[in-house]
Structure formats: structure tokens, C-alpha cells
Image (cartoon, rainbow, N blue to C red; front, side, top):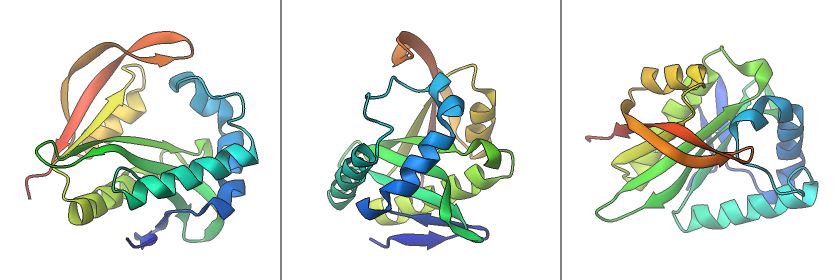
Length: 182
């Protein structure tokens, strides 16, 4: 597995746990932006040790072909994370599917970085993992994310009622899927 991939403007990297400080800074800088749409965090989430352990766990999942997380950097600044694209719950065999999650720094939205990095990540996923189906679950109120996923070619499949607990409340999520027919 190649650890770094390049697009026209971005660098997608699988980070070792020695880069946990960059991950922590990314989350700290975007806490207020991310939290309204995410499950409750572990009390230690915003600590360096927690992020170090998480990167180690994710690295092991990548080695087992069960997940694939890319941290996104602009080519002009390889020290600051601007986003992340995560393919998780990777299933093989007759299911050949996974779920996608993504988030981008509040100062880097609306610039096409999410589209560019998700598209590149999906290309890697299809070429190296041979995944057939990618699923996305999005809160119906998150219109920018819905617009993005539709622009990427995902199709709406329906509403998953009371499917994910966000901020202590069970929330409905719009379910989207992308089918790789190659």
C-alpha cells in the first residue's frame, strides 16, 4: 500500500502515529464546526495520546484491509491537515462494500478539495481493494454534504430512520451509495 498519493492540488497521506499532533490540531481547530453532526466523543478524544492510539489502530486496520483513511494536505503546506477521507467497515467477498466518512477544515470548504480528495480516494479504493459499493450516511440537514456526494455520482437510496446517535439524540440519515461497475 502506497502511503502518499497526489492530486492536482492535494496530497492524501496515511499518517503514522508520530503525526498525531497534526491530527489533534485539525480536530481542535474544527471542534465547533464538526461536533453538531458527529457522535459524542470520548472524553480523551482531544488529547495527543488518544490521537496517537487512534492512528496506530487505523494503521492496523489498513494492514488488514478493513479500513483506509487518508489525511488531506494542500501541496503548498504539508504541515497542516485540511481534511480527511475515511473508508471503513470494508467488507470483502460477496459484499465487497464499505462506508465513507469525510470532513474538511472550516477554512477549506467550498474550494473543491473534498470533491478532489474523495474522488482520488475512491479511485485508490477501487483499484487496490476492488470494492463494488461505497455507502454514505448523511444527516438530511447537511445540504453541502448531500450536494457533494451527489456531485460525486452517489445515488440516494432512502432514509435510515433513527440510525445514528448524534449529540445524544438518534438522528435520521439519508443513505447514498456509489456502485463501481468496473
